[in-house]
Amino acid sequence: MSTFEDINTRIRGFWTEQNRRAEQRLRNELLVANGLQVVAGELQRGTPVGCRTDLHAALGDADEFRGEVLRQQASSGGRARKPDALQELIIGIVRRYPSIKRDELLERLRSHAPGPVIVEIADEEIAFQGAAGASKSASLKGLKDRLTRARKALNSR
Image 1 (cartoon, rainbow, N blue to C red):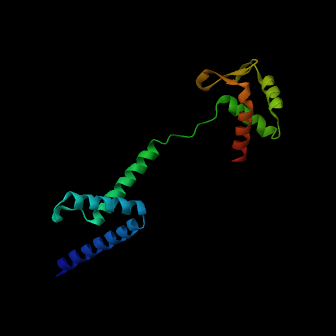
Image 2: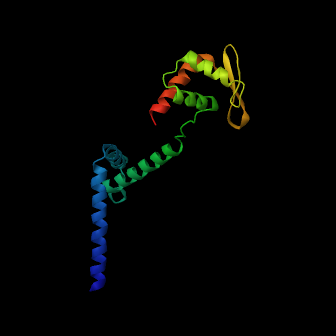
Image 3: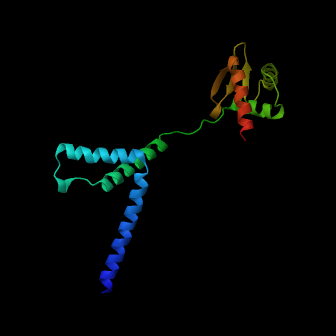
């Protein structure tokens, strides 16, 4: 007698969980639309009744597929870019002088050249050492944008 009670208890637990999941899935309009599309497609193709996917299974399949899509998007999303050496230097200057203007920033950068970061400041660009000692350059026209990004970075912390 206890074996049947055991089996019945397990079956009741299984269906309680299935019904809970189905209720959650029915609240998601996208899953419902996908599940109904699968069921309607089988009906339209003339799939025999015994071989058709029921709505609960179609919702479950749609939910699993949604999870796979979200995992794929998360893995291909990339990482946030880190500031280069010049931007780090600018952030340090802005930290000390929060209301600094572009021309004042340029003068402060000139006082750092030549140094460990800035190699040279020419008429149109700043040559600096990037990651792993790679030579990089940045336009002086973009200095105002770098200053704005530095302020945003400091304000967000």
